[in-house]
Length: 543
View 1 (cartoon, one colour):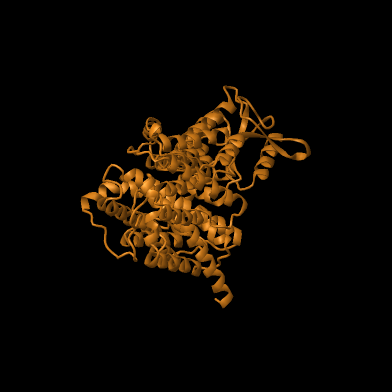
View 2 (view 1 turned 135 degrees about the vertical axis):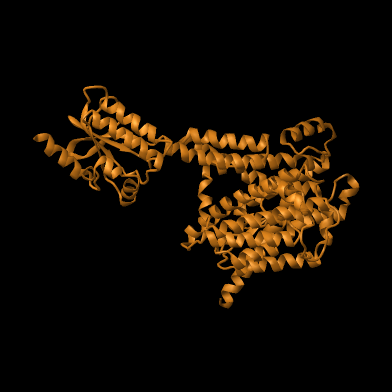
């Protein structure tokens, strides 16, 4: 790295620190952790990913989604912000690191592909609503004790008469100012300006004495390495929380890293990134902070600032360390309502109404899935929402495989083959049916495959003498499906109808051989070329 590159990356790192410090305070608030632990996420965890991860741009630090999952999972186990709560948060980070390490050993980086963009949009939108509602109380100066979103709204409604107007006014000013700067001067660190300005005003005009709550003393100095003080019995209770964090980290980090790898034409090693994410979360546990994730917002900041290497993250950690060593004293004057306003702005950024509307226009069914996911996050909880999101993504995959596109091929003008819906007695030409099945054959869809062929052939006398299966999309046949095909072949043979497989790829041929379908159907009736099989039928029909 030359001098110019080092200066460029160092500058980008300092810019990330300027934007990331206020956000990290907000994320610590979402997670129910002491404010200083937000700083800690920008130290050892950030350096851990820089050392072991492959992505040059991905920033691994505190994130709203995993912070919300953590808060939802720990809310009933210990008082928020207590020493026991912090220890539980450390254990969740350590368990998450272990799951990420196991995923790396098993090369499970592909798991990121199993959470669809649709449900991820719905999930993050739900998190945005949940987090935004959770900070309305602090922004308005109203005490809220419930951890459930609906009950929080109820408590706020009951406490409206006790709204602290100075807190509400200050919150509104911060939100409006930061959003305005972000709209017209996006490179200006609006959250940092708001935090510094609020601290200065609070110290000068004694906000605390006028009824505006402040966060109070913030521990100074660097974190002291330690092992979370918990018992083995706590592990069982916290594994579900860690598993939810694991799913969120794998999917969101991979999606973010992939976006910038494509943009800059970098090679992305998702399994190496799992190593970096595991290291980052292990270091989070040992440095007294909470679970960390690949942050889309902070990654956008560092990439937009021109960073090209991991040196930018080292510069960020150095800047945060300086703040912890020398500048924590002023933070005690930070009004809680301002911190709530910063979190509220983060929540707004997560609510992707534009993305949901685009989904609704193109796919109403997927929009319903996204909406249900968002509703579960808000009404039930973040942890349940991420489990539902994963389950619904997998169910959509199963649905597509269970109910694939099928059709009968008919030769149209200029000898171009066209598809027509499957119907009883439908033929491609007299005596011939060319049937296309658009998915691998497995135990769940094999019955549909056989039933449609029976429907096409129809009752006696059969509509076709040959049924050619266009198997171009059938890449696999499992044991159960092979038995269904054998039975179908026996039925058709008894009615003097030939079952033929064409367009067979080598991997499918291997399955047909292994399950003895080649013997049952006949080797001469399995071909890699569809047009040759059709020509053979026409030649035999002519005689």
